[in-house]
Image (cartoon, rainbow, N blue to C red; front, side, top):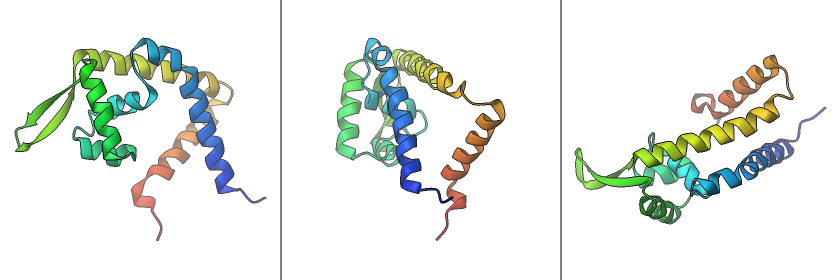
Length: 141
């Protein structure tokens, strides 16, 4: 039986969307929109706006809007990069860390509810597969 890659992609996207939608109220209680959450969750690993845009695969202009919103909400602040005084680095505030952590707990709880439907060995296999799909060293030409 042939596996339709487009169908797998659609199923994966639907699963992620359903989980995110199920957490919508909790994100709203934290003062976060879904896309703002993704910025907040990634900023520690990608502290520069251009890096965030690349990592999250969203336009730089969108990152600018999300960053402005998150700064206004007190979740992020900008600071001058000591290594390059022309650049600003984004840093999570204490409130930002708390909001990010609470949102991650909500998402993990909701995703875990769905993972409970499969055996532990299948969870491990799913993790292995996802890591393989994301591994840049596994790229083929």
